[in-house]
Length: 588
Image 1 (tube, rainbow, N blue to C red):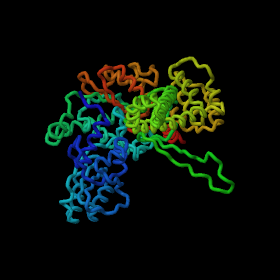
Image 2 (image 1 turned 180 degrees about the horizontal axis):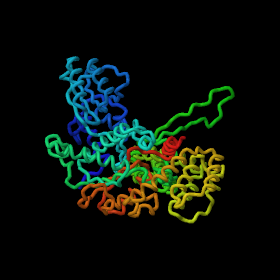
Image 3 (image 1 turned 120 degrees about the vertical axis):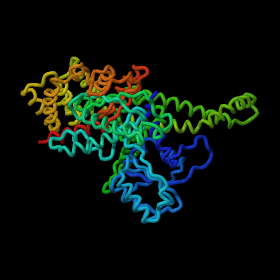
Image 4 (image 1 turned 60 degrees about the vertical axis):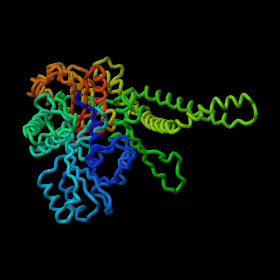
């Protein structure tokens, strides 16, 4: 079957790269070759969700430094570079060669480097008398970021260049759109090279998704026609990586569903992304924020920032990231109770081992418990790691709970669910917007936009004015609404003859849009001129993204035995970031 394990495939390629592009030795006691890793911000973003500092050290990385930082010469150590092939980066590499910073240079480019830039490096190496030191030059085709085994994003740095705002702004020029398409297509091409598969592409017609599909198809076909240099055939593929089983790639435009990114959610991972500072699997939180008042005249205590990595190695996270928040809170307490019971057992055994005297019962108990204590002590590292993870999730869940309580997020979630499923409402929308204790201005705007997007009939002018007044009184910026009104009008015109909408998507519960699209694609009801898939075993979806859609797809996959789904998006935004983009688009 096709290898769909995104993290595993990319991690394996990174490990090979860090081992000088040779397969890393497994189960060896030999010390690795010590080296330095030089990356740019793009390379850092690709590596950081996959490998910890400890794992890098285990592979012989003594230092990892940004390319454009001030770096001292280390002339007796090889350097592995992992950077984008930009003009600025090539100039700095050439400067490193001239300055003789390292013993040897292993140059790895995230995307394919052009011939002219290769010649620039060759000229610099020749001028610096360092030709023999440039040991290897590789195109790695890793211009995307894997966050989960079944989730990837195209970029984190400069994501505003391919954002929803960038694609949909009114003054966009053809050259701007071409640059956006080139950036997206390059990342998708890298993804398929890493996956080792030529996809069957399907998408709705008449939007940015179709533009990406067409350009991506041309890029893939061009590479396949070049038999000598094709990345999908022969010696260019890693052994066992390529499969003749072609995946189905479903490509969607964000405009197909504007409500889901605004929705208040109720699952752990999506809530963290919504209310906390969560990027590339790392949560940043402020703590120790001056709970005690500072003495009169003294400077207030500076808030410290604490980071928590939520990784595949965290079993609690893997089990509960898609769970409803109340279940998570309950599970954290259960884990804490279990840990305390184990800790108490260790203390009890230690106390018994300290017994004195000739009491036969005590001696017998001592003998019986020696093995137990030995076992308990040997499991202490595991117990300490368990405690660390419990503390992590206690802190994160507490921070999330604070937001839920202070903003009444449970009320918003339930109300929006009813709006999106056309259920009976038990409270007036105007009452929630007007309630000063219910949420922030942004929460209120999100709720109203979902109402406006999902309403089968737009509110009357008098009702709309009443809503707008309530929103303004609550401190809301109406710019996002200005854009959504334009978008809804345009969508209605565009969808009149759309086969995609006519085939059942319009009436479905919005939170399931992406899953429904995948289903329709499998049934061959969404077309863009591609050949029909031959019962694909793996389905890809790519759309401007959020964790709500990702979790919906994970749940969908569980009901489809034998299917593997990978969710990807050009950018991963939370509701606040999406609202900001809508506001920029709606400013008059």
